Image (cartoon, rainbow, N blue to C red):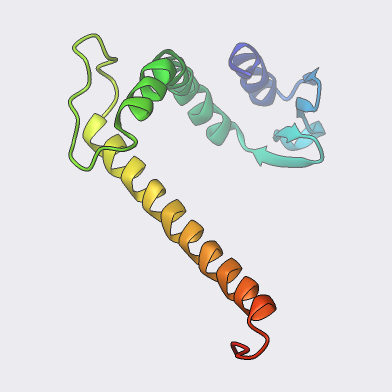
Length: 142
């Protein structure tokens, strides 16, 4: 997308035909209306020239951000493995990626694990009630 967005923007500004496709992803101009359409499968967004130019301007920032996230993924996984059973914040190793807010990551890990714990507790209680209802026919639980 990054490679073709400038060409699409230029085609919209000059009212020329442009079309490119990569699997289910497609970008094209839509005739004499100076509109660009970007499709993913059967869903699409339509852009005017100004909107498309703004998208082109921020696309490189988005690409940079995705590169940083991809580079940090192994550090995030390692941090989760290290801290998943901790109740207090754990400092990341000095070699860890500096682009990650580890304090926020720790809080989110705790929040997700707490939700999973609550869900598992509810499932266990429901299973015990079902088992007791089956075993204890003399005192059925309502």
